[in-house]
Length: 315
Ligand code: BYC
Image (cartoon, rainbow, N blue to C red):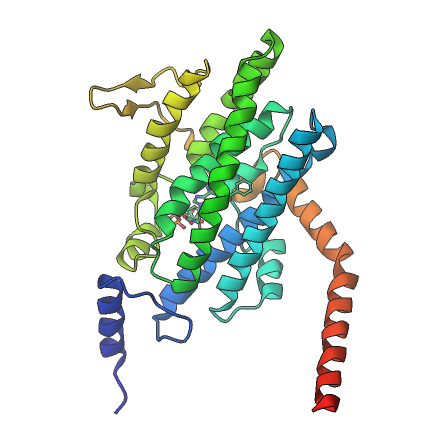
């Protein structure tokens, strides 16, 4: 006897409420699938596009040690993108389709990667603030209800915490250096502080996706809760190495948390809509790299087809 949609929805919600993971072949509401496809593909695109601002500094790293660490970090980000594309493909959409949506502007990636990286301290600011913000979000996503996404997050979080530390190390070293180095570190914090807070998305009251995402446990905590956690962790870290966050309204409260000033949401939406300083550059670069890699993809397919034919003959 087949179940009605209402029964299937009820059983689905019971699984979610009982913390049972949803797996690719399980029944799921269409909107759950669509919401996951959107969020996971945006997440994957962010990891991949996020390589560009840092890739810009590989040839100019100040030492061989710094270059090796930066290369390893960027390679990790590529890996994160690939785990996430694979996890998202289990929802029935191909990698080619995800890339096409990105190129057509139908899929987003994190607003943070539309800002330029102007000096070496920006590598510190990205590792410390951007990966730091990403970890706060992703630790929460380790408990997301979709199994393949949750499992990808566990591995990604381990690598992100190394990234956060390497960024903080760069900032701490610069703050222990010359006056010019200290100014560069403060300048990088000034430019990346507010865009890092924007990574968590709009305030809860303006977050159109949150209510269903929370009901279905795709998201486990709200945008504002995660943003606040990041702020409360990061301001003391800044002060510890002699930096000051560029928020004149930031005040420590008796409970140990911080009250902070307003975020410029016009800037956020402007960047999200494609008008940030580097949106065009980032997308053009991705399209170019994708086109240049066409022959590699074709060679891989030809090779695997040849291997398959050999297997058929051998059997
Ligand atoms: N940027 O209802 P809301 C990394 C959009 S990369 C752009 O709150 P939701 C790294 C949102 O998509 C880590 N768009 O949405 C890599 C929605 O528009 P649509 C990236 C944003 O999904 C290299 C609309 O605004 N992490 O670690 O419930 C080097 C309304 O928002 C942004 C992830 O992707 C934004 N910042 O919540 C270094 C985490 N914020 O789609 C580091 C996974 C919001 O309806 N994603 N929008 O047209 C999430 O957790 C959630 O999707 C968000 C947004 C918290 C980002």
